[in-house]
Image 1 (cartoon, rainbow, N blue to C red):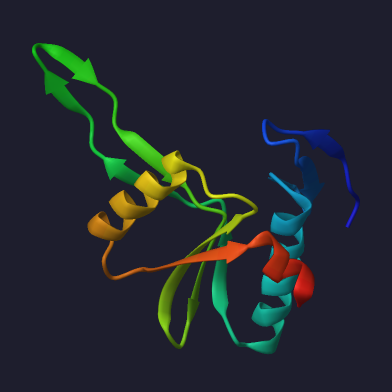
Image 2 (cartoon, rainbow, N blue to C red; image 1 turned 30 degrees about the horizontal axis):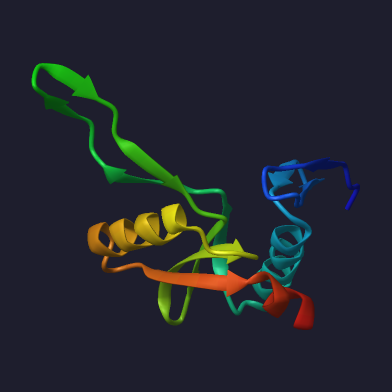
Length: 122
């Protein structure tokens, strides 16, 4: 995988691989792990950076308020069902709120947070 590095707000290196831009080396490495899992048949229908609506657009006091979307790192299917993953080195309060909104809106989808250090250990 050719690598192109830039840096994001948390000081992580942004990495390009297979035409995708990942927010960190851990996220890119997890993508590599998931690709191997697809090859082995353990998971299927791998998607990179799927987007989900958390709050629909609405009108408040005559003013149109945009909806809120969440972009996960990965989505795939396994024997456990549909899985959405987010690779995190550090969980922010904003992420915790979005995770709760996601779980409320999409109760049939398993939400999995993968810690960056877990990716490096595999």
